[in-house]
Length: 414
Image (tube, rainbow, N blue to C red; front, side, top):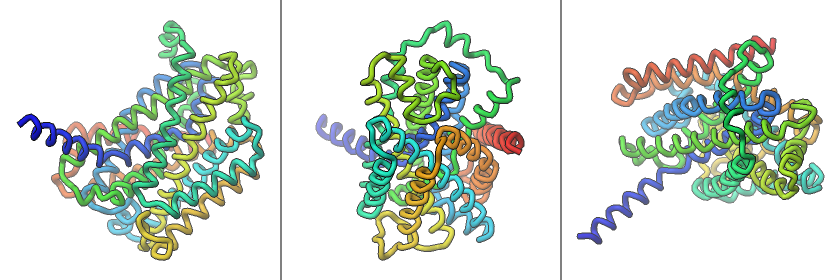
């Protein structure tokens, strides 16, 4: 009897773990190089005053991605394919356009992170960015979905190095308490806040997690139990990614270079500011590992999401389990996205300023992205699977607030 109970428990445990992956991977990718740089700028400019918004963004991130999981699990279709089926090609192309702009911008930030790590160890940009490009292309061309997911999760867990560094920084409890006074009146603070919102909810995240749910076969499993397990995957990921963001804000709030955020003109400058604060050059190793892991897992997710989205809209094969011969458009877009991002980084100068602008651009795209997400939830899901009551009201309220930040960022930019 005891052996049967243990066997049953083991089967349930493995069944539970089999669902995990898409949520955790997309959340680790969410804390990409661009997000980390934006958090670093926020900490350097405003100290601990960007910590509370980061905490508030945990449920925001979870609620948005939970709708994405629900759509993929119930319909068995990716985001682009679902928009095309429900709203037609024109709207699908508009959605794919926002995805393309967001993906290219994100890849610029990922390769800027890789470039910065290379600079820390004395590698020329052409070597670090070039080697990363080749590696990432090969991972996609030679792997299956589950293998790619394992590679992404492996590198993504390097981000936990930032939590270690934040613990070593020993922030003052009194300073943390004073951080609750948020300077809403300051336009620069509001712009950085919008950039942080854009750094948390990004268009390619929605395309990736919905596509991953389908490509991993979770839609075939179906059922409320699978949805519950996928929700836990997403919730844990949301907590981890925002903990990492808060760690970066805290670290730069403590380190705060003499020149302020204006002196953080490169990823290497952020690393050296931390090494100077800790008076220990080995800190650069932890910082470099965290930044490299964040950049690599995000680059994988972004390119796959972009390739999935475009292929879904065009109606051509797009599974990572397909061969290159079977899905040439999917793998072609996947490869070209890396090449374009790498070339843009090699041609850029102030990568930190470029990165913050990219995150602000993501915020501007949120009204389109979240608008499609909510419309699909209302039209594509059977009534029994739609959001109900208070939960629906909370999700809609959160989405409207986030879209409002996007419109504010657009108005500020204009």
